[in-house]
Image 1 (cartoon, rainbow, N blue to C red):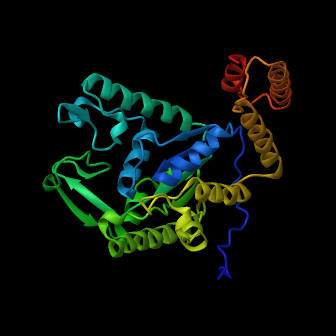
Image 2 (image 1 turned 90 degrees about the vertical axis):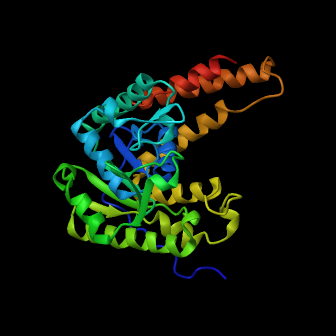
Length: 320
């Protein structure tokens, strides 16, 4: 049986194009859609703190980015001979304290510079469950530190709204688009996951109603309600497949891209497919003609849209 009332996504007043920077922060949706945007040559910054799931940590991350408040050595924690930040994803961890701190602050400064010209911020919340560490409070990542060192609890709708109220003035100059990650946090328990997602949805609904520059994109509903079949999920039956991500990307594109931006995206996609083509014989005359044709295509689109950077593709095709 086909869903008779699919998710309605009206054309948004928020318009993304290749020349206006955007910031994506939060859970897997931010990462997946952010990578799609970068793949299509958008000026996008993704998760300067790494993937973050809970709204409190997302607010803390945004505040540090906006303020350009660098992290200090005493904010790092050592575990299993590795230095880490409980406010960051494990990808920032290092066996060297200086390297860990440098990676964190380099990403922070880059995001701070990026956000100066940013018009739109996408915030993806994944869970209302939070872990609190003594003397630190809510953490973004537990880094496999023993559970007994943390206390776990479910945030309330009021707590989430209050957290975003603390940065309301800082966010006034941006279009803020909220999404809820469709990834089920099954390890919390399915009932607990539903409580968590419901809390997020209620909080976001309140925030959007109270702020004219806030809006909501229904990535959660698209996957959970339209793509119900488990063929849209990976083997863990939790994370969406590439097919599901591409489906959401199409809806996202229809919502936030103008017709001219979609046209540019189509041209970029054709070039990327061609550049990634792998022939049987790289040295054949046919393939060399193919390379010459693609080089000409890149030159043409570069002249037509000088704000696009095809340096990576030119290097790749030149190596052939």
